[in-house]
Length: 115
Image (tube, rainbow, N blue to C red; front, side, top):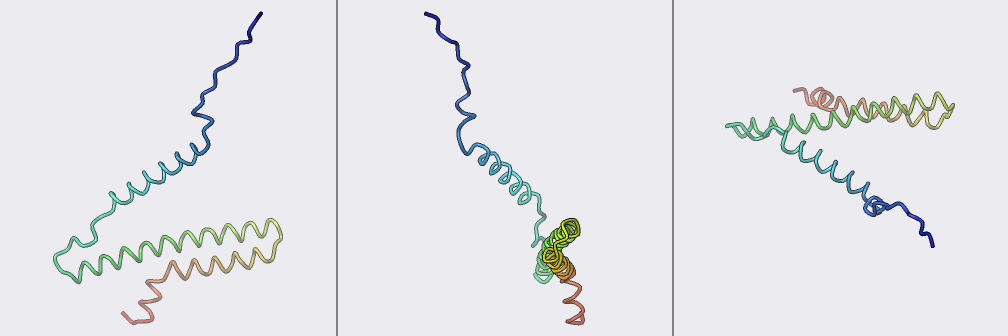
């Protein structure tokens, strides 16, 4: 009697969720790099300077979010012109306008307060 030889498969490669674990490990490494790579906000002798440094840091984060929204708005407008979808076009222009407002929040607040 002849027995067929079967290929051994790697059992670990068939475990569900390994891709999710790899993605989570990559995300955790990215967050750690961001946390350890940031400069210290309160590294000043004057408390008011520390508050100003923190304010500048927060406004730079807000500007980054605004730029992401601005880019996403451009993508939506481009896709709407490709698919001839007026509702997506209006949504894209609204996202584009919102991204502009969020990007220039600090300048808008400075104009309002007169600083």
